[in-house]
Image 1 (tube, rainbow, N blue to C red):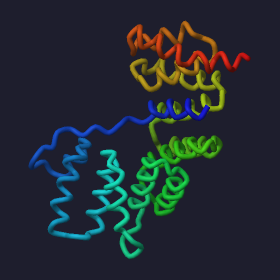
Image 2: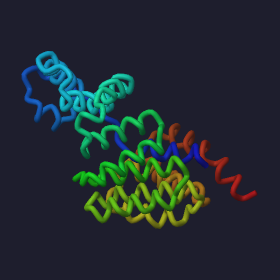
Image 3: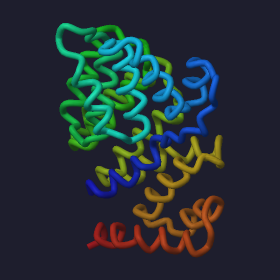
Length: 238
């Protein structure tokens, strides 16, 4: 069950891909396009002139986390002792690093601190919900996802996340009920399509699951995915 939950979460959050560094680009433009390699280059140059600057080190920790370099991310955020700024952004970045290193309870604790410090970013509730999900605390995960919804986060993304919790708990019809309207509104959404297909297979509706998968994957890939999910569905019938 836990493995399936992890698989579905892979389709819940998009990975960060950094474009080629654009020399001379402003930091605002680099942040806007998600060029984390460029952001690292920018702040490392800043650090030469302002060594041990806590704001720069926090920006570096965040950028390295997005690049998947958790060792560097942990190094820079570890330099920010209690004498430095421990604001909402600090706790948010610390939580993200915890998530990247699979320290889910620590991530939850840091996200709670960020919320306490009035962070203005509803994605924190999505991340908090995912952390709770990895710990199999589905009630708290659901509450966090609903908070994201109440704070204006994208409705369809929230529903997709709620559906992963239903799938993890074998509540497959509930997952279908959540995802089918979302898929009908946005059939090109690959993450929603994949999770809907999982719930359909586990609910015994192989033809519809196959039809949905074929709109995003090749025949061979679709058959492979269906076969990988079949054992879960067959075990439920035993």
